[in-house]
Length: 285
Length: 322
Image 1 (cartoon, rainbow over the protein chains, first blue to last red):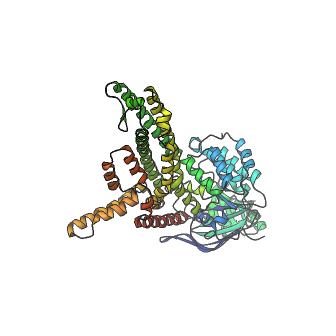
Image 2 (tube, rainbow over the protein chains, first blue to last red; image 1 turned 135 degrees about the vertical axis):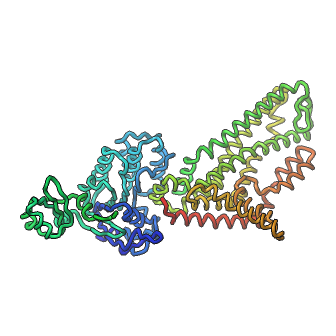
């Protein structure tokens, strides 16, 4: 199957700064892709470019359409939650559902009602009377009732408590995602989405610096806990990162044979957070 | 229902306060004021008598000629036109602020990101706001106006009945609330065409301003006008700056008021010359739109408004500051 998103050499300038500086990537259908990067690395700009919300230089095609020129057609099949709490404050639950049902050909009122029934939302409630968590529940209910091919989430759980965050990703995974759909998500709470991702992209200074599936990630990267006497040998293998815990050193390696590492100590699969910290070293320096 | 109808509905939901409640409350206030005036009149009537259309109510109650009754009807019709004015003025004010917020509020609270996540084009969205302010809001205001007029006639009927006059033959057969409202409905498209430069300018400012669109919208034309006036005074140029105030500042900011195209000097003169209520009624009836449709300034303004709306659509599509 052809790629859902195909981007080559995307450049976005803000004055002298480049929010995107030659970013290239490709996203296959049926994947859940995490786009991870430090603040100001160009995550949101990349997502906005995919959604046709901002103009960008370079080759870009989403579901075979150019988001810059065919945004209207594109939005029939793409949905997004950009940040939390962007629902208009005056709207009532009933009005929001009616409106989306009215304008979106792929919206299922039945599904939406089902999702809303699981929450404390009432049809007459206004967004301005809701807590942040409830607003996200409403937004998610609206979006999950749309049979979109691509769902883009930009920091969808920012500022929510852990209960809402867990619930958010759980319903997304259980009630929405299937192999016809593709989800792209950015977040700073990497640990929480680690287990649901199928693919991972790191972005830094407007460039994609890592683009891998989670399966390959486990093959390629390894973390080893090394006793002090073997630390020098480990450093010789040019690790990506090193940190100290309980008098032992933990080294992160990229593309070093597992058996060789096993001689040094206990080998683990690194967490995305550790990988992120090691890769992004010196970003703010 | 199609997308555009839903967009109109959306605008109504968001602005129910201005489009529904403001005209209704104004109507209620007007009715209360009329009721108060009538009660006061009834209390003092014992001394002076009530005069409607040059006729004392006591005289009507005895015997009035058909001509005299016609004058009563004309007087009531004129008073109904007058009653529509306060609601129209408030409609103008509500529309002004609606336009200033139309493309700004959604950027300020970032809900534009939600609206843009739906398959609705920027052209449709912006045009739904234009149609709302050109047609939906004025027609809603006229519904309130019509209700106000009917209640007004009912109140008058009660007073007349109090004097032993049959309100049906005197009021309801001679006054024509329906004709007044139909006439006002017919003026809606004329008002809308006339308002286009203001609609375009305010929406453009609303789409463009990073903050306080009101200041942009007002300061640019008023500031330019002031600079021109000063320049004019210093250099004694022959380009009169009053032209600028009249045709640029006025049209960019105030054309939203219904009936702004009426030649008030002309109407005023005619009203002064009127002696009978029926003359006055003719003045109101003849402020027809035939003459305004031939004014170049109407069409030039409308074209300028359309161009500014197109610019606002472009800005909504490409503006990226949320």
